[in-house]
Image 1 (cartoon, one colour):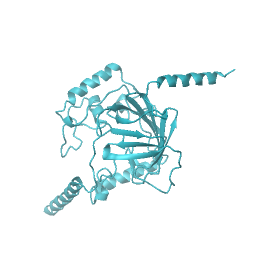
Image 2: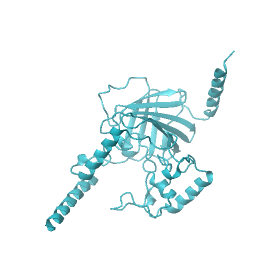
Image 3: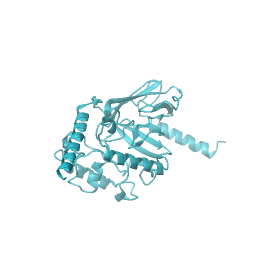
Image 4: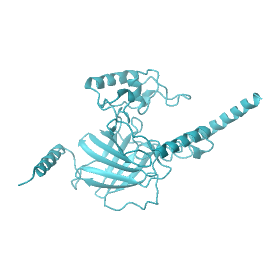
Amino acid sequence: MRTLTAVCGLILANFALLANADISRTQDGRPDLQGVWANNSATPLQRPEALGDKSELSDEEVKNFQARHDELFDGEGEAAFGDDVFYSLLECDEEHDSYYPTTGNYNHFWVVDREFENRTSLIVDPPNGRMPELTPRAKELAKAAAEYAALHPADSYTDRINSDRCITFGVPFIGAGYNGYFQIVQTTEHVAILQEMAHETRLIPLDGRDHIPTGLRQWNGDSRGQWDDDTLIIKTRNFSSKSRFVGQSSENLLLTERFTLLDADTLQWVLTVEDQGTWSQPWTLAINLKKSEQPIFEYACHEGNLSMEGILAGARAEEMAAAQSAGDSQ
């Protein structure tokens, strides 16, 4: 006689098969993840403190947020990026600042419309919807980096962040609403994920090979993938000490991603972040990527571009003005 646990496991397995019965599959029977997927969710990474322990919005609240979005971000006003869209709506901030308040920015006409859901944070663990506290060491490093940046914003191009230098915007890129598109191509032995932001491609083996030695470091880390039933699991480590994920060093980061087709138009992307030297505990976020018929266009960013010339020239001009002011005051 089968045990109750075995029976329940069989029921759950059958239910999973039924739930995934309509998804397309490759010739080898794997879920077909191929195509272009968009992250245009308005849900912020962390739950706003003003919402306390409210993990979900009601359907009526979602409807009101969408209506408010269509009114505030009608294409005529200042653009808003990332989590600022949700915060502006939550705070009824009609005068939200541009991304670069001192120089201005393009209007919201050039930014994709955002999609609203009931969740109040992408982070699903911890239950409070917020990143765990940084370790004391990580806090010290963050403070030192901020102090250095304030004193040396642009002594040289090496003082600028990786994205300014067009080296990398970080992999994986979890920002929404601005170049948040991905194209996936898969074979039996590899999966390739083209990230629109900075046009970076991750080529991930699925053949069971070992990770590269820990002493070898790469901007985008070293990824290895495997299938667990209908979920593609990707583990990435060996990031460069100069790489960043959500603003923190990725040197000791272990990132586990899980891709699961919920239906023909929704690819659930769950990321678990582990780094004992940076956060007090692991944390997990989930993004529902939506199928897109739009192609990915090249993000033509390159090191040494005109923006870098402007940044460095502007810094020299500010230094000259400060020196002139100091001389005049003597």
